[in-house]
Figure (tube, rainbow, N blue to C red):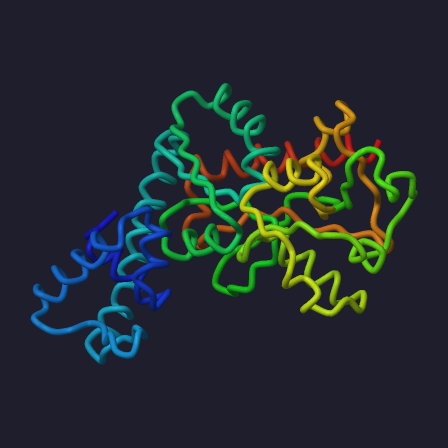
Length: 304
């Protein structure tokens, strides 16, 4: 990657937040601030206005941002052209995945891929869907795999597979014997949900609102930061939850949780997200084709 200071500047300029940029870049906020100050010293002008707890680009900052966009695009094209010429499936790829996917889908996929492509170095970063999309936008990762909708039209989004969401309750719960359950019935009990920015949370809230549940009814839900924490809380009898069916295979076998299909059914897509100029990297193409086939096999098994 070209000048690290420019990469940091680009992240802050896109997000208009030093805090969010630090999270996306996996840096401390003081380190982000230091990089920006170095760049401002180089240009001998301020690139950001920081007033009333808000960050905005100065006129000079807007110019730098526009050129940074072009620089990163050209840099990506250069890398891709060289790799395409050599047709070498090697190098390193950084994959980002939202929490559910990283825990229940990617380990087997990446393990199989690595065994067949030993010269490709893989790195994995985990965040919620919002964080992964930001990393793709800022070229921090090569490929994102997310579980929620992606609204950025400048990114390539490719659906991998469909994932059913179900309600979970502890064994012995009065709803456990139901063949299907509505959201109105679920909301009679304490509800457990994921944190802000989670794809599972976003899909669940949209679904409930479409079923006529007041969004304010979820304000009092217990928010937890991972699927494992949500499942543990349900097992402990702290409430009910809606989760990915892919995340509860072990618990259903052990009998520690009971799943109930929703009425009407709820599903969402797992999707690959990437920058347009990243597409022709040989290692990326190989990984995408491998992942597509993996998803097809997983879908076929779930349909049996």
